[in-house]
Length: 201
Image 1 (cartoon, rainbow, N blue to C red):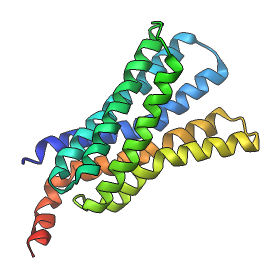
Image 2: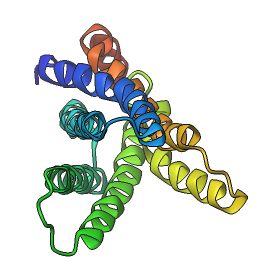
Image 3: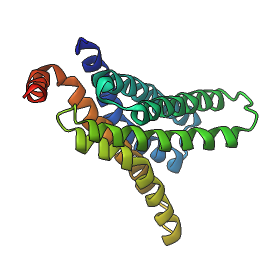
Image 4: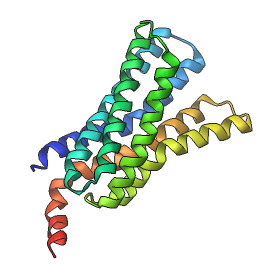
């Protein structure tokens, strides 16, 4: 399979990984200052766009290593993709003031699918070792959302109320995972021959 498509999708996911925490910081600052509902709405939509980038990253990561993924890894990719897609749809409907039946249930279900999918797909990525930094990227992907949950819970228990810190806790782990994975996918054409050579020895 040509590595051009995974490489292109990797660039998209890397951009998403960089933008995600930055946009969350901007959004948290706008919400804390309360200067403009319009600006906050624009920032919210921009955050949703990064989930589209992550969805592209899932596709690129799957294509790059599909021959090395087992059934659990493929299932994890599918579950993560569905979770991201539902998050995008729910976010867009909410941002456009469209009434969504069982909105909380939909949001929680999408989040649960993202966590389960990311853990499964990330673990499979680390085990497949197709990418240059497969273990690091896979572990980061698998641990990002659980780490976000634990970090948010720790802040609640400690009574810490900081929109900036909350944005960092939510944005940095998942964004870092896709930055590493995106970089690997972008450069897969450069080191692909080396990896293939190792597999044949």
